[in-house]
Image 1: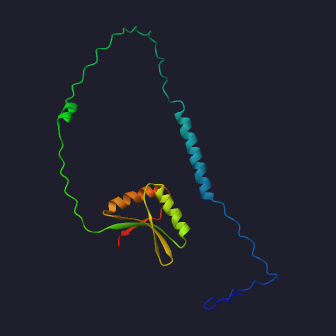
Image 2: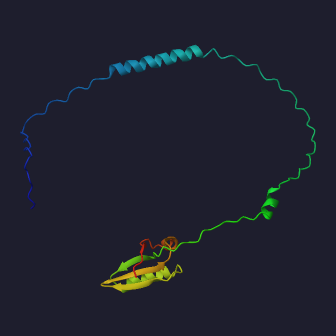
Image 3: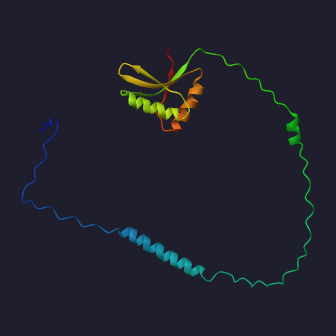
Length: 178
């Protein structure tokens, strides 16, 4: 049985046998709230009695026979004169894209690390069904499932999102160390 630390705790007072409990105190009724409610109810009743006969009676609306409508044909739909589509066909947009500078940093994506080769092969097959080629690297007691290297991190991120849709949510992107 585990020991308990009673340091700093006062002992609980013991109940005496046969001691009678004090009778519960009588609850006071909220007299003030009841009086306020009654006064509001009486005031509302008085207000409704005063207002009940004051509405003016509206005169009945005289119905006039409907006028006969003459149907005129709609005017011909005007032809739209838009210059915008023609301007677009004639315009040529030139966009200058600066050349990508190679930083020399490569990235790799690791999607799993397993102690059994069969688990790594299963992960590799799942990734292969998404159209990507994964490699299994054996280091020590671990089998790592990796993809890459990638020249840009953006490409690795794109592939990670596509693999994530297949249910592989453990992929991480790191700098590649050859």
